[in-house]
Amino acid sequence: MSDAPAAFALQGVTFKYGDRVALDSLGFSILPGEVFGFLGPNGGGKSTLFRLLSTLVPLQLGSVSVLGLDLRLQVAGIRRLLGVVFQSPSLDRKLSVAENIDCAGALYGLSGHTLREARNRAMANAGIADRASDRVETLSGGLRRRVELAKATLHEPSILLLDEPSTGLDPGARVDLWDGLRRLRASTGVTVVFTSHLLEEAERADRLALLHEGRLVALDTPDALRATLGGDSVELRCRDAAAMAQQLLDAFQLNVRIIDGGVRFEAATGGMWVGRILERFPAEVRSITVGKPTLEDVFLARTGHRLAPEGGGP
Image 1: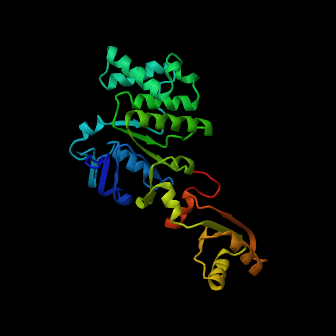
Image 2: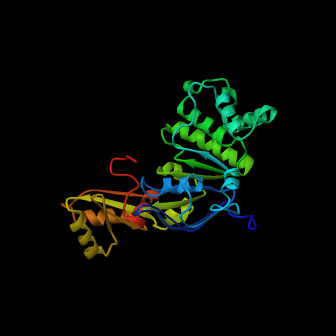
Image 3: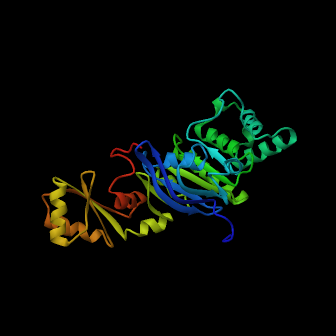
């Protein structure tokens, strides 16, 4: 494994739209066989990076190798290694599952017995072998996503790229989709690379890169990222966040941050601070909550921003 080239290796990758920097000097590697995620808010650089890695836009500055091939010089060879599932649907609703997959097979140059074998294998891996004759318009959102997955893996790619794969799916369909991806990785060894703004989805990565304003702000396993914050995350809602932050600093020397009108800090044992703070500032504090750090807490700590605006929208 150590002698194998990285699935992706990036050095100094920068991408601009006019004067706006979408990707800012990115550098990291993705190992073969990993499930690797890019987590960040809309506008954080995920879509641009996805378009770059899937060869939809040319490299501007820096270098990218894909299983040892140069993205700047060997695009055709790289495309043969990739399977891509886009965020927007790419299925013909009036065709059956098998017909949609056959259309994709024709684009890969497959036909006859070879295409039938590839189609049957891809449908089995995606868990839709019993849906071959169903029209796509009759399928649920989760099943349609599995058809997209079958299309993308028809040619047995070495790397599978997925852009916001769970968008629009209910929780049960998300679980089914990721169960299928895990089975596919286990049976074929494919490298799975995905973008997401969903915390639940990001937890499924072996390693996770946090992107903010085109910059890489953290990269590690989800557990290791959470461990950087210590034991508990404490959030206070109060009348005057700025005044409370200063009072907590003066009274307890706490390292606090003001996030979306609340005051937050991390502590090894957050519960012990509830009584102390309420006793010291009974009139100022409206509510106080304690919980284990989440990936969003990590993102907050590194950037000062939430993954999504207050209210939960992406």
